Length: 398
Image (cartoon, rainbow, N blue to C red; front, top):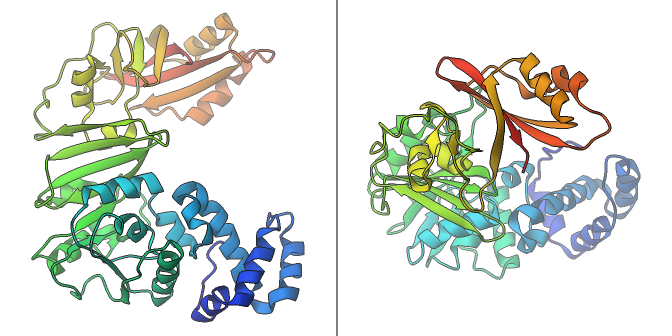
């Protein structure tokens, strides 16, 4: 059974029936691992016949969903693709709070994860999707969450509501590069803006989107959770308060925002330090993707190692931010790094790089002969292009 199991209306009829609920409970007590799958399916086929695959897929998706969306999703219905694209709970709630008090139409509601976050804040909040199976899943998930289900089957490129702010999370297309542009989403940003020109939509896009090429009026907010960039939200002019925003969220509740009314205001920025400070700081991914590295440096009294890189240097890292204490630095070579490893009796090396051709996994193999096998002592190697050559920084691992 592949992870891309395709649910059909008959599957949903069974999953939401009394017999289906009993089968889901039975499956929830089984391991459903690769090693146990044959025995699990055999037992479940005896219970629910041809619907066993749908039962297994649903239980496995629910197990993946709870860490991402919270316990509220323990009884939801999913497709694998919909779960992959669903917004993590803290990120969805942050976005919903910015929309508080506004009526919203989720044009690409999928299985309803964003609507669950929106409904406590937005009145009304309705959803639509082109896929009738996902709309039925969304209806189930909203009701299971104690929320009203105002849903319809409709194309995001049609106008089926009045007076509501459009919101869309268009599907991703596969792309060979690290960034995608508007034409690589379905529907495209250009088409969504054209159809909903009277009130441009809020758009949730991949964090690597080349948003500058879109030339879209309003605010770009890049949001991270626990250090990983999760989304770039394009806020239309009616909701924009700045030009660029980096929002850093944490599962523990800590976080911060960094904003700029003019992202180019620090374009000349501080010059790189002639002598690297005691610490190297790697800013949060949201700061990097929002192109606010120099704003972050100015806030915390740091300088860039190179004008083109996000690595920063200073006398100390900001409070609560992981930094790397610099012990040695030199032009990069495998021989130099191997010497540091032997000198310090290092057993484990974390390798970070920016702006060079160094591939950490390949370099680690080349360094392995120099490592001390009977110690757990760890160091961090930071390799960065400074000017026109790679430079190595040997750091204490925090």
